[in-house]
Length: 95
Image (cartoon, rainbow, N blue to C red; front, side, top):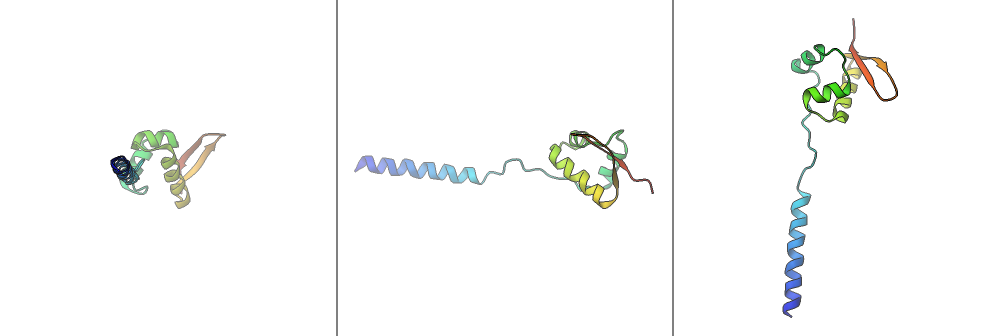
């Protein structure tokens, strides 16, 4: 009987640890507002607006920087200046 009680308590402990791990948020990223003055000023100061450059400047993941640049392109702020197999270079639209 004691052996069964020990097994049950050990199982309860592992279940509690598993529940604690599920509550963790891994890879949460705070995305800056793409249309803010700070972001626009930083982008205007860059020679080449690329996802990698934006990611390093704002400490973001490259995938998040790609989404941000795509959003700005859809809004009409940026346009795609050059594109290759694995690189996109953006420029501000001239109106």
